[in-house]
Image 1: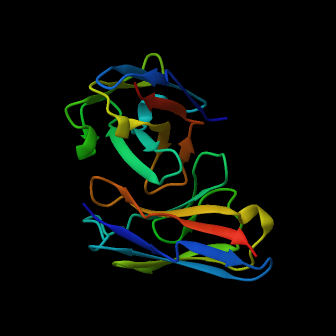
Image 2: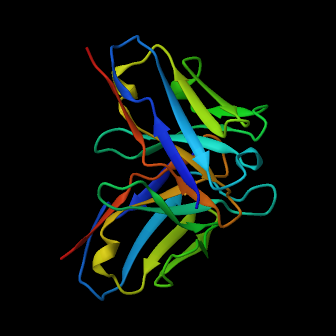
Length: 112
Length: 118
């Protein structure tokens, strides 16, 4: 199985400041169709996961543009340009290229 | 509005069985792959299974192969997860999800809790 490794696992951030989460996969996520199926989810306390980003850098509907994704191959990053209080939660990267689809361990974002 | 509503969770003894259901509405159910994802209490996410639109292709994570069976009824807009030979490590919130990897389409239910304990 593809192992997804996130860092850091805990991220205290000051409101209005940027935040960055790294995600590395144990093998390339480039699929035979030319797409890279790296996805980012946000899970707020007590809620179901919500997808933020698909195919590395595409934002889902309703996702604020302060969220951005980048990367290729095995190295990916989720950035929040200015953290707001509603961004508190756990963020997961996930690969949808190789079955079984696998998640990173999660990064807990909290306000300092 | 897209809605996915899971039901059927509860307390079951080790070795027992349970059947989860997911009622879908607000989209053309038969056009989409469907998925089950689980989350053990206080832990991360695990993608359990995917089923193709017509049910002809199903993928399972190794940890549930041979014990869990996914099925769907497109006439009833419903997804199912039959869970047999349950173990303590199957204790989790089970989410029904409909997602497309390449498109702006990703919806999850609120989840149903399965507890395997004696």
